[in-house]
Length: 111
Image 1 (cartoon, rainbow, N blue to C red):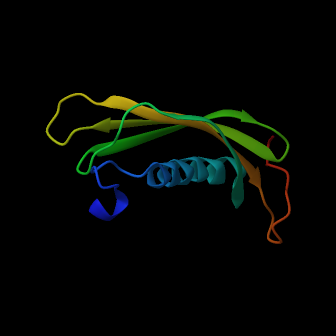
Image 2: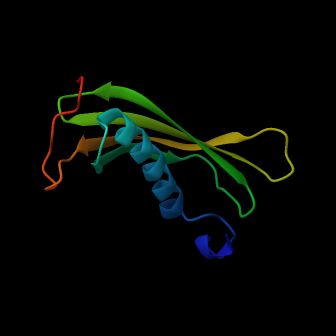
């Protein structure tokens, strides 16, 4: 939306990163079967701008699971509104820690 852009009409990187965090968080919740928190974002690089009206698609894949933490890779692609092909715009690794009800790290089931 226009409120999520800079004066040139490019989507703010922070908005895009928040969408990536949501995608990684959804996967982390399924893997850990509960609450989790982002503890690190690694290797994020913006390859090209995303414009207002572009269709943005995010793909989150599980890379590894530890005793209490998970690493997910998120790729983001954008396609101009009337274009047939999209292009990768960014990617990053997100590390989440599974949390218990008190907010302390907890073991991930079947990890």
